[in-house]
Length: 364
Image 1 (spheres, helix red, strand yellow):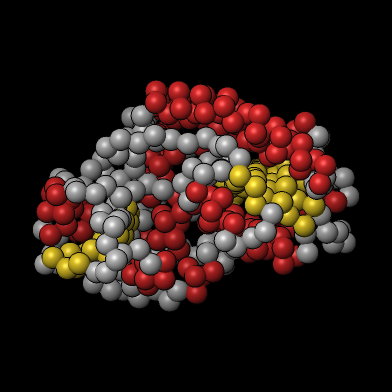
Image 2 (cartoon, rainbow, N blue to C red):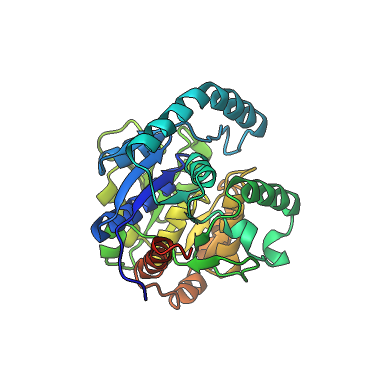
């Protein structure tokens, strides 16, 4: 065991989706509590989220996706990232020169963020990757999970492989555990917010619904036909107080209110994003997941969710057969989830501490 040495940590957070920022908050709080000095590079919405909680947050351009009708528009996404990335390149380079002069990090931690990774590579620093995406490239997945999506899997795998290659360590957060096929890789349970860890799950009679498509009358009709009280977030983003229509309760966003409704739900209806799915699994809530089309990472999450018996994957929520199959299967999903266990964030944070200890003595 190595003696603790405080490190200067350059921490990068990709801004596409808030899950990266939310889990990075937990890791950053841990690093600061341990006595490390941290500078943060983030893009998009992650900057605003982290700047409210930490000093030393720098804005930098990052990758983003363009969505339309629950589908990723690949062509528009590629063009937007290339054009805006080139436009922001001088700013990014200037930010790093300023960082080099003022901070001089000892180690880089990247949550799927490319610029901090590039900085670490150019300056021959140890780099620790923390994210859930690397499970696609660094693990072996069963044919049943990939069936029908083999081409998307290969394309996404190639992209992830090229984004952060040759890191010193890959710490992957996941609620499923496929065989690891690459060295310097370890799997750890999802990083959970303190508010989720503090929540006391109960078996309520309502469905928690998180959908961001406004004006979806077909979905509203399908929810009405479930016979369950549905506490709906995201479908009416401008509201400031609850609106009740029959068994539907449209709720304004409140972090604590959302967590309370999640912890007491009978089941969860949402997309295929990893963060909420990991929270639902931890709280042992069956989930009906509708991944974004052309977004293989979400498809993989939803496929594994169903493969393990923790919930169901669906292409859309308008088909009555989808609802009947899921609602009839709730008892079996609850039984499968009853065996899931996770001891907070201990696994990943301990692995990160170990990696930094090795970096401090030049052994990473």
